[in-house]
Amino acid sequence: MTVRVAFALPAPQLDWFREVARRHAHLDAGHASDANGLAGIVAAERPDAALVSAEPRYLDAHLLAACDAAGTRLVAVVGSDVQRRYAASLGIFETVPDDAVAIPVRLSTPAPPVPTAGRVIAVWGPAGSPGRTTVAVDIAAELAAAGRRVVLADVDTHGASIAPALGLLDEAPGFAAACRLASTDSLTIPELERIGQRYESPLGGFWVLTGIGRASRWPELSAERVTRTIARCREWADDVVLDTAASLENDEEIASDLAAPRRNAATIAALREADEVVAVGAADPVGLSRFLRSHVDLLETATTHRVRVVMNRVRASAIGLDPQSQVTQTLQRFGGIRPDALVPHDQNGADAAILTGRTLADAAPRSPARLALRGFVENHLLPPELATRSARRSKLRAQPRGMLRRRAS
Image (cartoon, rainbow, N blue to C red; front, side, top):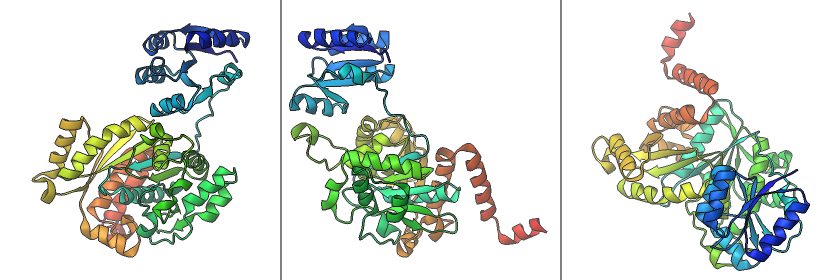
């Protein structure tokens, strides 16, 4: 396969790589002496790949954005740990050593195809307990009620909580077990069904991969393991809902050995693998402030443009009169964000769900919070035909039983 390659490398490396690329029948799409120059070539020529030295002169965020916009595969050439860390600080993990003769051949190998079987929905929110787990659980429940095959996975390495929220045993964390099997290429769908647990509901059950019971076990959820596990879950279900942690920090990738585990690697990997991201914020002054500050980091971390915003626990007692308008105006004014759902605060419904270890749909089906989340799923996460069918069923369930009997007669 012939590939059009652009280069930004020091002179000795540039001459060598261009000659080797020519011998492998690849085409030279141009070269530049710095990142800004290569960004111009990428924008104009739209090459298939760009081979760049992992140094600030040749590689920066502007060049990365230009490659993303042009659909150009960016490969960083690294010759030291310092260069490898610099590439990682920009979110570039596709690297090759500077003495690899086979680089031009590797450029011919297309990237692995994106799985099309299942969709990944990552639920994220900033620090401060905005309700990530509640939203993740009830999104999974509403998708299952619409007839989708769903798996809910707890990827939180700081405070996993899906198991207690649903009254499930978590002595053997399912997601950590899946990650260990994935690391040895032993993770299969039968294995997932063996280590997973079922949440059963009259509306529609779903699979659950519980999280780590002790936060000290976070090294088991490395980025590579999490990515492999998510890929296998795509084959297992129509929708994979991931409950993630809050922290998106990756400064440790610059300050420490790249071979060391990363505390936030599971969350970052989940967000980068997600087809949809649901960002959850608390609708109070402190929660809004935290959400607005962290939302920027989320957009820099996630690879999808489909980021849905759900503001949780909307109530006049914390935000003032007409809380829906107050929250919407605050997000638009200070962040240019338009919320996709405003979930009313319903303490009685939430308490009923926690007390019985059930979803809102089962514990408090008429809860205002449940109705708002169901509307969000129907409007944004379900295919149109399923959304219409789900809305019709919901409307029928909401009608008094006497009216249904009269219609039937």
